[in-house]
Length: 345
Image (cartoon, rainbow, N blue to C red; front, side, top):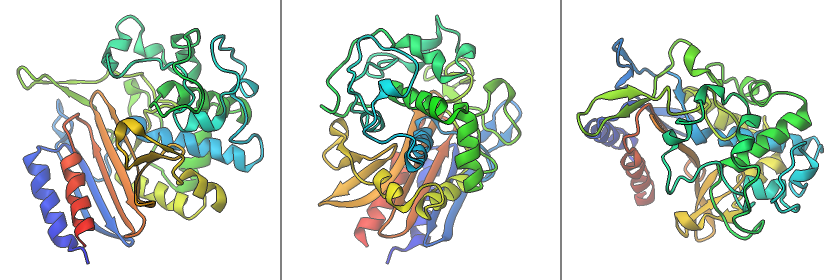
């Protein structure tokens, strides 16, 4: 049996050594065994992070987009094999007409992205395009609408933010609601996630951490206000707390958000994430570690300038680990401690 007391102490020590800024929440079998907050939510005002602090979670919120799509599938509004071109009003002259919802959910549509994370810093996108104008999924369309396909639908996994922008447009068109309103009503409210939302960065609510970017040359910090879109959307940018992530995972696992069958589809490995290693798979909006055919864990994670997040479920051991940070300092060492403890058990 995993010694969670020793594990919690090890994580505390590691977090201090890493100068971790954020919140750690570790739960095992419905019992919280570690809650820790460190660093500053607002450096200028010396306001510390606490367990109730809301953090931006970047691409960690792609799971909310996937659940939204799956809810509409549950209602028989369309299917996973429905074609994109039949579900939105926009035209994409160079896109393959056979791109489906399944392709978009699994990053295998082969479409161009609105930025190249291998060659371009995310912050650079907004030098000539004001980030304060990026307020809806449709605002991103001109950034990739006329670009050519990168590969054929279903040929390979290639992580793609534009694909989730398109899924957000599908949600809006097929539900008759704005994307953010849909998620608030059908996911956050149902799950009891009262502290979560898609907040405008120029009007952040109380208890919300500012994201900070470190200047490597002199160790100073600046906020990420001009480095990311002013409000989040289908590809990322929601705000939440560690407790609300626990509420979300509970609602998902208890089939309060989706039917049991559709929940299982969402957390079933759909494609191998080749670039991430042989053990890493992807379901619908969620990553999975698969070893010898067994799903050892499923997780959501994300990174933006001034944002770092990881929330993971280990179903066999009924363990949940959530790490929320408002800096870009690495947190994988904290996750590694937990994984080593579980696998040594």
